Image (cartoon, rainbow, N blue to C red; front, side, top):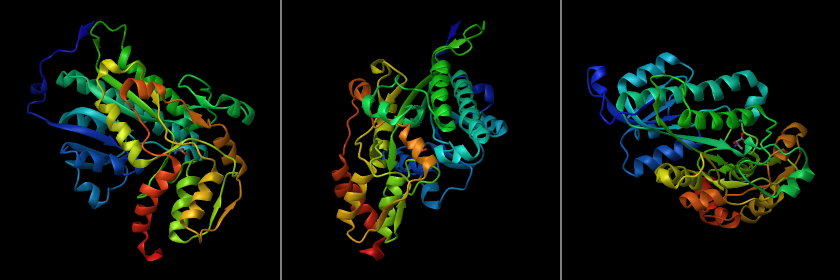
Amino acid sequence: MTSIPATNTAAEFGSRRNTAILITGAGGEVGHGLISALHDGGSRDVVAMDIRELPDSLRAQCRETMVGDICDDALLSRLLSMYEISEIHHLAALLSTRSEFAPETAHKVNVGGTINLLRLAAEQARSHGRRVKFIFPSSIAAYGMPDLRTKAAAGRVREHEHTLPTTMYGCNKLYCEQLGRYYARHYRQLAQDRMADLIDFRSVRFPGLISADTIPSGGTSDFAPEMIHAAAEGRPYACFVRPDTTIPFMTMPEAIDATLQLAAAEASTLTQCVYNISSFSPSAGDIADLVREFFPDATITFEPDEARQAIVDSWPEDVDCSAAMNDWGYRPQHDLRSAFRDYLVPQITARYPERV
Ligand code: AKB
């Protein structure tokens, strides 16, 4: 086994390549926030990829944008030849609701895409001689509670507990966490020419995310952001889960900050590859009550969809974030009320100004 050489071998490619931070799935909710945060923080190296053209506002904040599929080997080879990638934020995925309509496609995109990116990261590290940081957003969907009694008794779950997911998306996320750990620590462990330490894999398990700027699609935690955006727009909303349904959430800016904080953490402080994070754990009824308080005209009804309800019931009511807090200083910035008061309501009302 050889260690990664300290010298830069870009000369193999005949010319110097530009350095880059690669973001896949850049057009999604997290991608929007991450690109802006990196740009505002002074990064001018972002290469953003998505299957659809990005809006001009995002394109302006990137060094380059590419329209393409993470399952397309030729595109990834082109990236390898063009850039020295130091960091990958692999956001592209089919979310939990969408994945249940096309589980095999979900597997292809969520797992096949991730393994392609992990291989790209390893090849990049070999070619430029430095470890590539691989930041992977996982999800509370990696958990699977067998029934509501177990969910109530479990309370805050730790990363290794109750990991028997019931959705294709959850299975994909859990497996990709394991793939990341394998690529970081054991990749090609029997090969004579093995190079160790090619990838620095770091993952957060996101709870449901609530953004004031974007509306999610294809997820099963979407009931919370949908309820809030509908109220701000003056539309009635029929919530697809029962009022007592409880899962963890956080605001999008907190999710972006946490991602960047984990990416910046000293490797020596990290004791595990995968970390829970979350800020508050309200029931759907708690969220509806606050929506009505801030938007008194809101019309919210509860019309549970049995199948989607079962998915949300399989997710824990809260997660234990102590590893993230101890290892890299994660701290929630909001409780539910302050999330509404200080972030969601001011920004959402600015987004739908005709309603105020
Ligand atoms: C989804 O609902 O699929 C996502 C998630 C919980 O990861 N928001």
